[in-house]
Image (tube, rainbow, N blue to C red; front, side):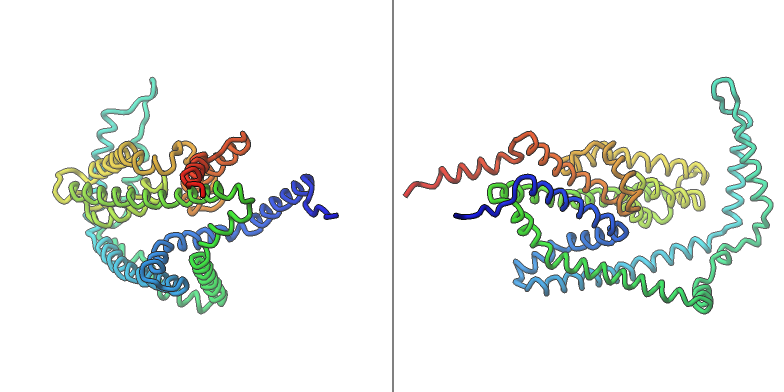
Length: 398
């Protein structure tokens, strides 16, 4: 007489609840390291197409392909740093070498014009007149209190090398801090290498956790989840290129200095949803206030207003024409849901949470859709079973 070694439904449900509780506790314990784990996984995911190309086309071994990919990433990072840092140093030097007495004189001039304009035409709310000249007068007094002929902006920039030497000489804790940062960076890189080398095994391991009849739909769910990431990254790159190139062209047409740098900043800030465009606008406003336009005969203040309007126009064109086509088919999520996701995840994960809000919400949408179909006792992906039945009927009997 054979003994039935299968667990009863009650024991199985208890075991499932215990596993869920265990996973929640583990995530809570590791909450401080979630940012590093996400960073390692994202780096591995970005490099995975390059690894697959080397393995399938060049016939490299998996470990050697991972080594080559990360070596190329390090070389690319060094090259970008060597190209970007001199550009930033050059622009900073030009900023410090500006004719600051003339700049402050021009700022004082348009402040005076603005005060006169507000004296003549005071804004009103209902029947109340708003006197906005008081803070502007105080600001003008503060500016005039300086001896602009003695202003030297470069003297305001601290000597970071001597500062660092003094800090190191008086504090031994800095060594431990640097060592901790190095350990964190190396751990993140090593975790990313392991993800890239063995992450593909998850696509084979996860379906085996389920019974045979459910494996096709689990494989389809995984394929859609990976598709969310693919579409998100592809769409994000397209948006970055669109914003970067458009901003460079608009800033060049307006005659703003640092047009190329402004375009690069706007392109990278596009990664941060909602907040990024606002951050990218500040360097353009600063450039307009300090240097004005190279050929448009407007005051610096008016050029700053025009720059803000140009950035708003670029973002509206992107939101109306580009985003629906690029990201709509990829995620198909309402902007309000994404905004709420950014608020929640940024409070927990910081900047990384804001960056990953859209794809994580896309993943949750796919998983919740699958679970709801199973709860309603419906097939979440009926097309895969229809395809299997079609293939079965197409096979002639022996």
